[in-house]
Image 1 (cartoon, rainbow, N blue to C red):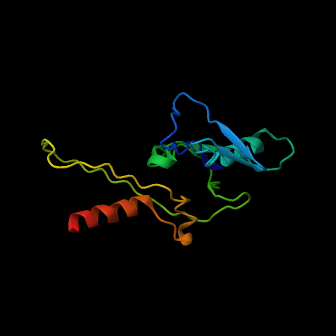
Image 2: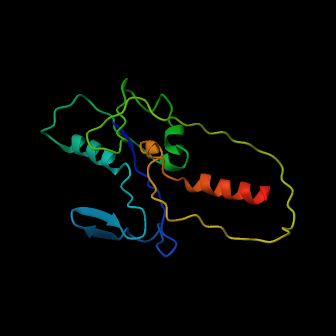
Length: 167
């Protein structure tokens, strides 16, 4: 059983939250739990909870298990990239990283890393400087909500910069 334990550490501009020191502050609205001006941090915690529950339970039947809890899934798959075939003995892997309880996906969106090294020449900045902020977007998961056609802040900023350069 595999999952990851890292979280997306993002906050509103108005928040002074320090992810390295401060606990997540929760807000309850009706039956929903939200974080106060930060991400909730529950991304794949369900996989860790499932795995530990199965290991701890005397009532859930299961074959011999290995539990793999990786880190850095949100920032480049560092934990998974450090694995070798010597770390695991099993022949099957159940990745529990879905957005819906009880849903297990076959395959994945995939990813790759490339390291590029080159010399840079630093120059003093010239010209006019602006701070451009893109905000007020709905957000969402790029893997499972891509069909909702929501605005992407990186793409919007790219379009803004392209149009500035063209004009």
